[in-house]
Length: 226
Picture 1 (spheres, rainbow, N blue to C red):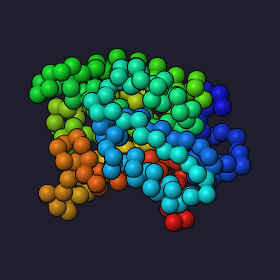
Picture 2 (cartoon, one colour):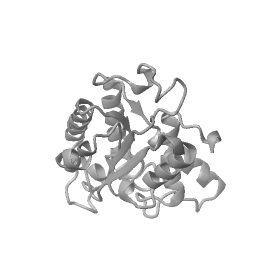
Picture 3 (cartoon, rainbow, N blue to C red):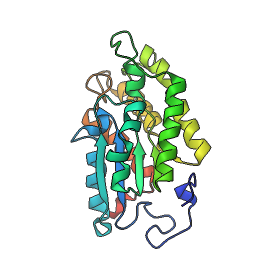
Picture 4 (cartoon, rainbow, N blue to C red):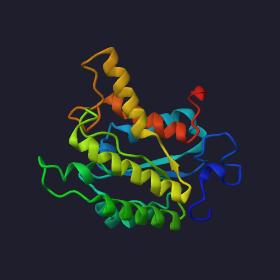
């Protein structure tokens, strides 16, 4: 497939008939990200289990390429060994939390500027496309469950930058951020103690479920098959 072509508009094949789940028989999905992705029982594990349950005949392989603390520059360094070496057909990219979080006063370990994030993400995506992978972007979720927190105010620009990179290349962008925001609002309206994260960033099981469902619906997953 030519770089930048949206997989949703790609020519129909036997492996991905129109209206069907987009990941075809024998294909490989790599989930690239930070600790939210790396979590052994997190959203990547949910993707693996649900795909296997709904489409066991396809033999789809899911590889977790999350590394705790990673920002865009870190993912660029390990892209060849941790992602492209697997010759993935599909790659999900979830990055941005640490790029902001690590630059806040409480951390001070060094974040990534918005411009460097945008440029680095564009380079990362282009390398994946050149390697033949279809890319699904997963905009970052939250830094604290308060939409007015300093982290979330800064994060808004990074979410927008990811969407801009995706739109410019005709990529699929999962609504991980907006679905997360909606679930938090509705959950807290029903119960003030409702929470999707354990510390404002890392997921509780429900938070991982929100992310997994956002990815799956973007890929035309049909849970009614289970």
